[in-house]
Length: 247
Image (tube, rainbow, N blue to C red; front, side, top):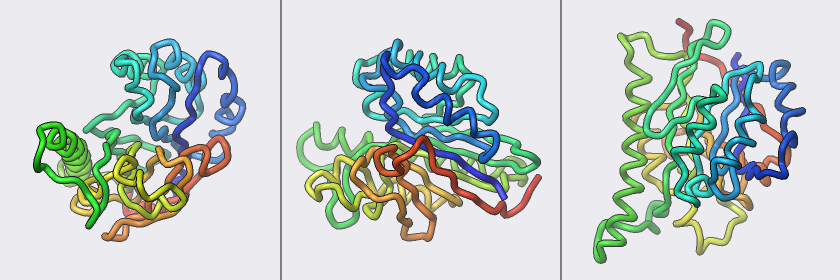
């Protein structure tokens, strides 16, 4: 059994130093891994990212993250990622990482993702160039996630015992329940779920939807968890997964 802790939308700033560290220091007692599902800062500055980095530096478990829309706000997303990587965080965007957690190989594939909507009520690459660019970006994020999952699955036939898809934007509408329906297209995209179902995953984790619901599922049966802090109501949620096989 592998225990995965996850949280998103922590929105830390200069006045947040030390806020989550006491809870994070307990991770060694309850989890094997911490996932950060984006919106780690308020305005996406290097200074704010430094606060996040200090909250997670030297934790007793590995930390894997994707960025969120807030982390892009100031155009310093590369600096935000650099601060986190300096603290030992695996920051993903269209790629993945495989970790050996007490003998179980756990692969995490990640992308921020983007909006666009869900089946029957989604945008398309038609009309204005701005609209085409919007959907193409969303598609590119989903394709990057799919490639990352596929790569995790096939390293010399010895894939990980568990595969997790980590995004900021939602892959399904289930976990948006509670949000105004009018903003669903800005909260996620069905393209993310299509990539997950096509390549396979044991769990999908996202944030972004502060008024949404925690539990959902893709059409292909992959459990989806919205771990935005306002939704889970605590420093992190823990999910226990049974590996299909170990290395």
